[in-house]
Length: 127
Image (cartoon, rainbow, N blue to C red; front, side):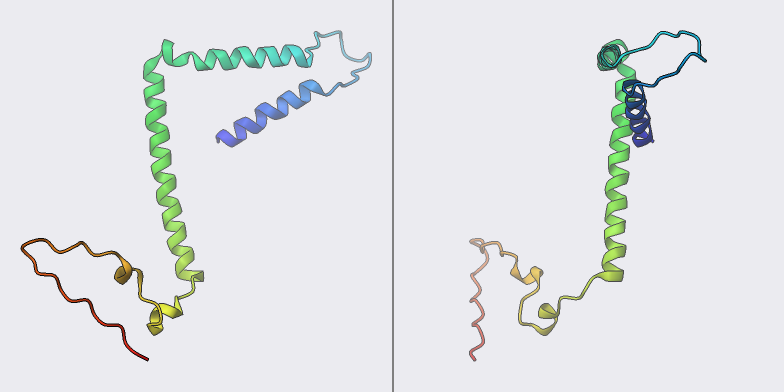
């Protein structure tokens, strides 16, 4: 929805900048130039940035809404990743054959505590 609003805003600015020759068929209307359009847009932006001072509850609701959108977007991305991985992901043949250890075995182990004796490390297989 926000994307459509931004497109409409920029499209309207482009239409204001492009000069059109209306001819004599339309009555004389006040023409707005690009400089006036820019100044009006800047004033509107300044007014919108000050809304949190005038109405703090609007900003709180906006923050909550953005948080909710972020959480939902993250969850949707996770679900999409899992679906794509199931359908198009390739299995890692190196970990299945044993030539490379899986990530769970590569994780560093915590050093033994004083109560727990140190275990001897396994010896690598000799070829």
